Length: 219
Ligand code: CA
Image (cartoon, rainbow, N blue to C red; front, side, top):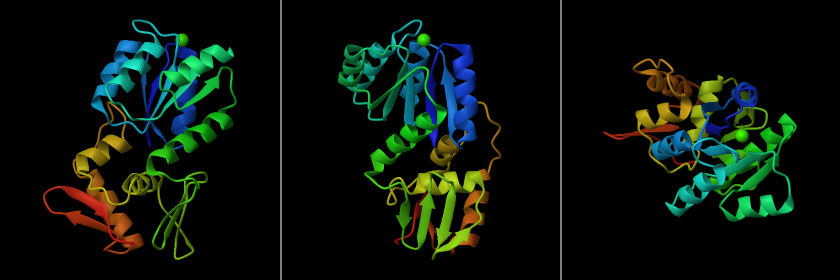
């Protein structure tokens, strides 16, 4: 899934980028509050990890303004401030969860997964669509109970198409979900992944919506 990391500390930012990329997310990293607002305007994120102490505009102000404008993406606040009142202020400003530095990476991964489940209304960590089951924790996929071999990008593409299953996605929107800024994307990369997924899942599993893009077939 595509994450926006807002963190001004270079060392923390670099280590979080590396860890989250290793957990199969696409991460865009910005270092101040204004840059965070510009990135949020692009509107293609599944989760925001937000530091509170930021140059140019404080994290709490970014969060309040984002929610006031109707921004719905889950926000996980990551901060060194750990008093109860700081946490309450953060949650009241529209944060979905709170992590106090320093924290264990496994806890970050678990909270990230929990927040990414929310928009699709799933309480379970397994994603099931007809004969297909995805396990985002272990990055495993099964079809009719048989383990499937899928690449990290194919897995990510399936996850996007399943969130929620009825939605139609254009190739451009799928590219935005699968790639961060500045990556060199081949002109028909998404089509290639879809081709490989259809070979593994069946031709009807991913449908073409003429002139628009793709959606999952009925389960
Ligand atoms: Ca900071």
